[in-house]
Length: 197
Image (cartoon, rainbow, N blue to C red; front, side, top):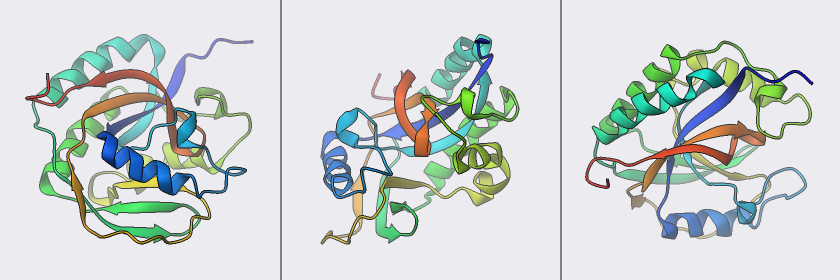
């Protein structure tokens, strides 16, 4: 089997335990036949940017990402609603601070862009999925002015009583080899915000 030269990546905000607990409780109500369980070490997260990178460039990318993240304080995140579609997700308010971090991170992802990805470039992806097109079109559809931060929770979750907004500050930024359903399981690196070093 040919060794892969590049991987799909997701640079994400990771959460304090109280927010992880809320996400895990909602995820428990998800359709486990068609989505992952956060109890199996999948990490709820907010994507800052997705893309591809050559394996040979990962360490250089991590060094530059570390400099970017350490130049920012952890942003205040405001969860404003729970939304229902194919996936159930928390909608996040786009603050100027969050948009700035996304822009810097995605500029770096573009700098190291390794081109389009296929299923073999994802972590544990056994068959083709719409996620492949999502990543390959992230720059056009989901970045910069089209950036739409959210927290995917699962499929088929029924509404439960929550009081919004839910406000918190992320703990760290994670770099993951992107997996099925856009999930974060295999961590490649993590980075502290200014003041959390």
